[in-house]
Image 1: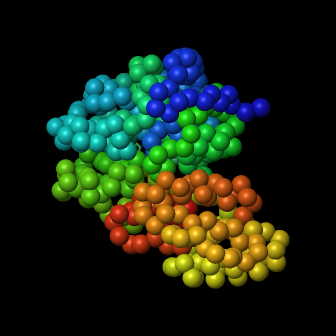
Image 2: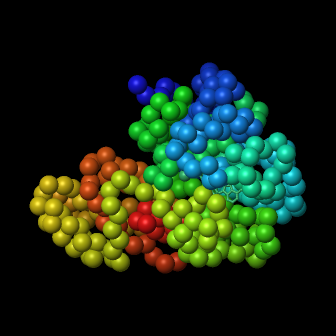
Image 3: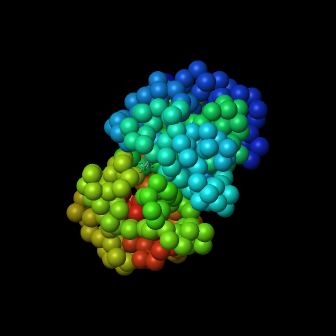
Length: 340
Ligand code: AMP
Ligand code: MG
C-alpha cells in the first residue's frame, strides 16, 4: 500500500483537494506538496508531534533543522524573534521564491524544527498549490524535501511515493517542479550575511540587493560534519543509488562510461549524463541522457534524470562536469554531493 495521491491543477488547485490536505495537516498528518524547487514533506511546524513524524519518515537525524514555509512576510514575522529591515527587503525582492532566510527564532517554534538552535529558516514558496495549502492551514508548514535522508530530491510526485511510500499520508501531485533544485539558504543572523546553501536563486541576483553577501563555495560545504556552517548539510546528500563518477568533459565521460560498461560485461547498465546535444551512437549497456547546456534548464532536469537512471537499474552513472562559473553554483554543489 502506498500513500494516497491526489492530482491537482498546478496553477489553479481544486479547493476540495486543498481542503482535504489541510485537514490532514491540522490533524497532525504529513502531506507532500509541490513547490517551485522540489516536492516538500509538509507538517504543521508548530506541532512537535507532527514534526517528529517528518524526521521519522525521512530517516533524518535529529539536529538537522527544517525550513519553515509561510505565505509571505507577515507569516515570517510571526515566527521570527526579530525581522530586520534587510530581511524585509529581501523578502520583498524575492518572495514568493527560492530564497530561504535564516533569522532569530521566535518562541513559538519547537526545538525539533531548529535542531535546538536559536535561528529558524523561513521561505515563501512560489507555487500556487503550496500557497493555497498554506492559506488553508493558516500556520507555517515545515517542509523538507520529500525523500529519505541523503537520497535524491523529488521533482515529481512519483519520486515521493517511491521514496517515502505510506510514511506520507497524502501526496498532492501537480506535475514537475519548475526549478527542480532546492532554495538558496542565506544566513541573516551573521554579519555579513552568508550563503549556507547555493540554490535556485542565483548569487548575482542576491548580490544586486546585498552586495556584501558572502559565499564560500566549497569551503562552506566542507566534507565533514562540524566544520560547515549549516547544520544538516552533509557532504553526502542528493545521491542516487547508482555510484556516481565524474568526468571533465564529454569525450572523457563517454570513454569512462564505455569502459565501465565493458568491465561489467553487459551484466549491468551504466548511465551517462552530458550537456548539450544528445550523443549519437553509444555502446551497448550505456544509457545516455543529455541535459540543456545552461544552468536553469540543466537544474530543472537533473534530479529527474538521476531518478530515471536509478529506475533503469544503472550500477553507475558517469556525469560530465559543468562549467566552473558562478551561474552553475547550485548544480555544481549538487553534483559534488551526489558523488561524495
Ligand atoms: P531540506 O531539508 O532539504 O529542505 O534542507 C534544509 C536545509 O536548510 C538544512 O539541511 C540546513 O542546511 C538549512 N537550514 C535549515 N534551518 C537552518 C538554520 N536554522 N540554520 C542554518 N541552516 C539551516
Ligand atoms: Mg533534502
